[in-house]
Picture 1 (cartoon, rainbow, N blue to C red):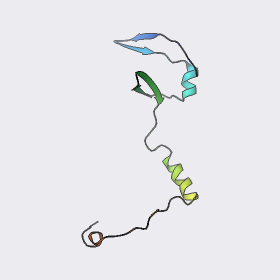
Picture 2 (picture 1 turned 45 degrees about the vertical axis):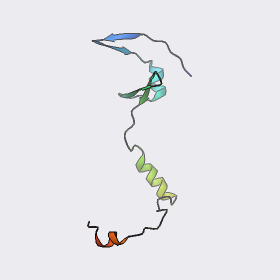
Picture 3 (picture 1 turned 90 degrees about the vertical axis):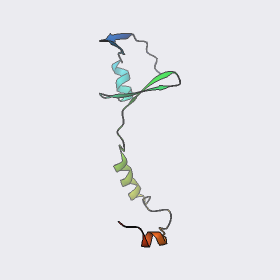
Length: 85
């Protein structure tokens, strides 16, 4: 665990914290981070994009045969007579 002490600096009407380059690289931060208040602490984490890596995961599932339905598809009377695409 790295513990770093730093100063809160004035940035316009706001305040900010400078993060050392070593911590930025270690965390994989780019130009944007998420800040979360959790149990009385501020948590910084890299921004991840929704569905990031899904394409690769689906390809791996296909390769291993894990992309099949677990249950048989069944249709009801309503499916056959009422449902319209």
